[in-house]
Amino acid sequence: MDYKKLADLLYPNTKSVDYYFDKYKDRKVNGEVTRIAPSPTGYLHVGQLYQGVIHRMLANKTDGLFYCRLEDTDGKREVENAGQIAYDMLCRFGLTPDEGYRGDNLEEIGDYGPYVQSQRVDIYRSFAHELVSRGRAFPCFCSVTNGKEEILKRREEELENADDLEVKDPCRDLSLEEIEKNLNEGKSFALRLKSIGEKDKTYKFVDAIKGEKEVRENLRDDVLIKSNGIPVYAFAHIVDDMLMKTTTVIRGQEWYQSLPVHIELAHAFGYTPFKYAHTPNICVLDEETGNKRKISKRKDAFADVRFFLRKGYPTTAVVEYILNLLNSDFEIWRKNNPTLHYSEFPFAISKMGVTNPMFDFVKLNDISKTIISRYTAEEVYNNLLAWAKEWSVEDVKTIEDNKDTLLKVLTIDRGGERPRKDITYFSEILDIYNYVLPNFEADFEINLGNVKKENLINFLTEYKDSYEEVIDNQTWFNDLKEKSLKYNFVDNKTYKQNPELYAGNVADTSKFVRLAITGKENSPELYSIMKIVGIDEVRKRIEKLIKILEKSRNI
Ligand code: GLU
Image 1 (tube, rainbow, N blue to C red):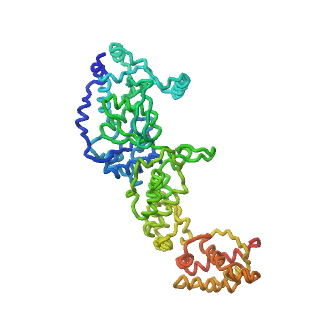
Image 2: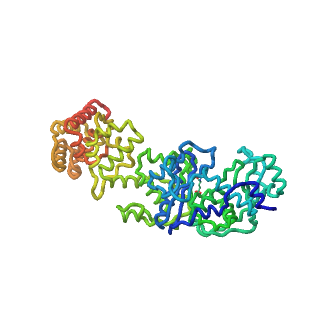
Image 3: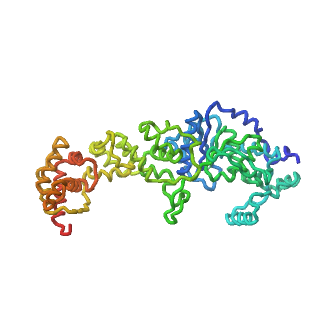
């Protein structure tokens, strides 16, 4: 067979691949060249964010480069604006690529473009031409299997006949004349790989995460370019990563099983395959079955990374949590280096485990609380405002109108050695501190415990009537204690000696005052909150509690 002639028939008027190899010179980068290759399917998956952290960190650590390529070849699944969203999300989480696709409105950066696959059709044609002239690909004129059912049925048969690995397409043996005849009749064709793998042979290679591996050679004549001229993932991956000089292809575990095709294809072009790193899948416990399963877009709201922004997690918290999943020594490093930026962490792909990690919100929340506890009050306020402007516009006015008050309450217990860790994400701040906002009405749940109601009412009444702002916490506390003792709220020691005196202890009195003022059992330092709320409001709120106590029989 005259393969060159066949190539010219199938792909006339293409540039030679040497043109492209000449155009895309070797990079002058010492370190790893990594890439993220989102398909525009409507959102950035948390698994892609997880990989994005690996790409970004590996490129940083090795003085390399991280670029973005948009894989928009699957027109059917495409969602409007989705490439833009994926790119924006990477940037929002601090993983901005150095090169490549930058959304639909900004020009791409870099000398290895175009970085959008739908704009690379000419390049794919040239490489298809090359493969055919090397005798390593052939046109297939069989009708397309469109229906999902048809595909599933065929797979089932392949599995049952145990020949799922070996798929030699009947069109691989068509003569040049037959092909020419089909083309003249206007028949469309898909391009298939002419596989030359052998049944008992394997490829050995090192996966940067899995270690030394051996996989069976490829025996399948897989489709490389569909009849509409659009390449499938395998073909585009090899051509693009080859021309864009990727050094390590880091991608999800789901691609591992098609690796033999990718290796064969790279060899067919005379190219030494890239290094690969197949990442484990982040999992969750399924609420219904109790089993570990992959994150699902349908079941898990956080599969779409916008979930974290909507909640108002600091993006660094999410990235640090991911680092924690990637390298188990991150936590110790963070403890020893509480103030360094996470990018200083000595990340290494070799420290990654192979087991699928579980996504643990408790851990994420803990990291997030710690990060927010280290912010200044201004930083928390600014983040809250920015969050509301994006996700909760109806709160913006409240936040702006109460700036001073919010700053005051956010300042309490902040800045010291052990800052208060009560905020997990920005969207909960207005709820946590609702008691400093205007028109607050506490919603009580009162549990008196051993405290005698009458004593409590008497105490609260005197406390309310005599309350005035004092300059320091100690004076405030002494006053509270003095009045408590007057109404038989005693300390534990006295109680032990004289149980009949018991009406509660001093901690109880502050508990009820706190409840009256904040509606909550926990809050930052009460003394400061009462100062922020002001005398009139303090009296009003205590009065309200007294009324409730007086009215209720059951409490
Ligand atoms: N477009 C592919 C995806 O979104 C990229 C896989 C890869 O990183 O090679 O899954």
